[in-house]
Image (cartoon, rainbow, N blue to C red):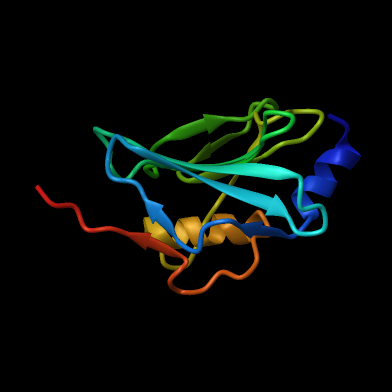
Length: 146
């Protein structure tokens, strides 16, 4: 996919089909559908996958359904987790991948937020992906019952 097409998909405002997104339980994942506001037929999958042994490790993925491309991915990982970019730069901790024609989804940048928790990371990821109409109840973490 050419850079111009990628930018159009990343920069376009999106809506969510569901009113609420749930943070998955450890070792589980959830999927949601988003769409381009200006081109309603263009669909995306928003995928949340949570670790089992490390329940605070979570991946948020925005996937273009048509091209099957990972346009944006946020890896919430411990601060000592290293990611090596194609240019050799190493970054530690939570990081964001944004798809480009040159690097695909291999290049990442540090992703810091003021109040780091799984719900806030999800909200900021969705904002970065330009999902509109988010409010304080858009993302929830359901209590786990044993």
